Length: 262
Image 1 (cartoon, rainbow, N blue to C red):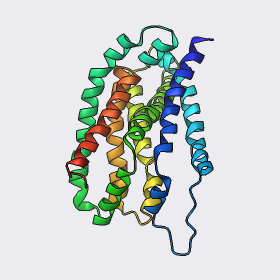
Image 2: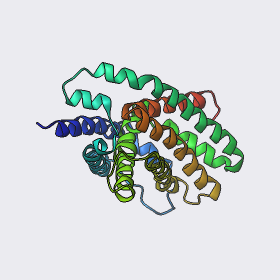
Image 3: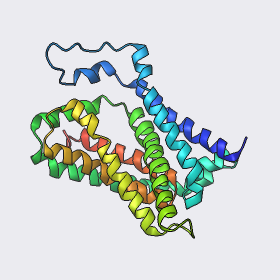
Image 4: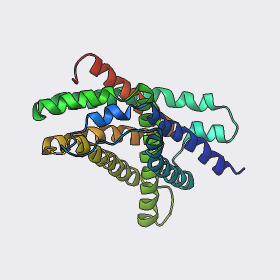
């Protein structure tokens, strides 16, 4: 089996662990938090429905992993741990170089999100804060770490950011030399904003009458961490962004347990 195919499988399986972690989410409780109009039938959650809900993220994950696997090496982006595993080499030395920057990135990113949320509270209705806190409790830690930490990094960094760097390099540099820092900076910014915008459909689902303050909050808070993760992916490797994403979730959970975000 070719090394690129092995790399695809390693990353895809890791991402699918995150997708499958949604099976631990109580969909009935999640639906109960939706403001369903009177007279509209509430969908019945069945095992088949839960499995069907995994199809779309699995397809998108496959496309993102395929794009990153095909293009990352062309622009100097890496996934050191996955590459070591795909090459049947020792994974631990590769992981060691990712842990420290990932932990620092997770701490910085998590604190930035918490502080931004605290500053934003006066501009958000109390019912929004209450429902947001209730929704947060419905996401198990395993889902936060596996889907948020691994799957989202594969989608946004390995897939989208890599594609953007490659596209900028091809269009503006005609594939001459290594991509310039501006290619990476632009890709980091765009992928971060896309990550923020990607949370809006879910926000509208639970808050149909979302205010401008709430919309801005969703975009800014989620984009903030994308800047940290994008920089780590560029400078250190994909796994450092994964560690940082997991760390940021832990920081936010700690803040919630202390009552700072409730």
